[in-house]
Length: 155
Image (cartoon, rainbow, N blue to C red):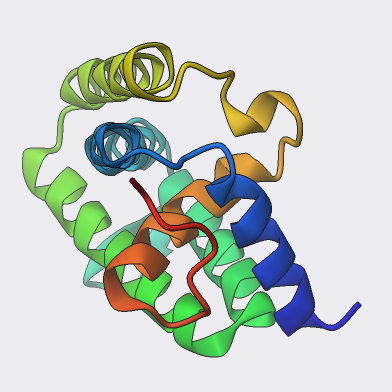
């Protein structure tokens, strides 16, 4: 399967679990909070320095691996994800408090739960396929920017 077919299949499968606008809205807030929270918490773990400007953190390594995975699946979507992760990382660095990150991370999962329980009335997609934990952010960016064919229209 080509990378383009793979990302389209992943987006379509993820989209089948996210058909209602309420769930997509909950996920837009929830996934953003989860990513911010994860970057905040992982950013507290310093590995060294990126030159004289900035510390190298576990958040940098994880974000870099995620970006490479997204770029391998679809370069335009990968660049959009790189921009999102960079913006969230800059915000996490500005806040500079892992406890705020932990609270954001937990609140993000509450939003996810509300989206599935109240609006979608189904189980989260990642319970079927753990890859959906990485597909979710790309799905939302694609919903906003329409870089790939729309997987599933929200009602």
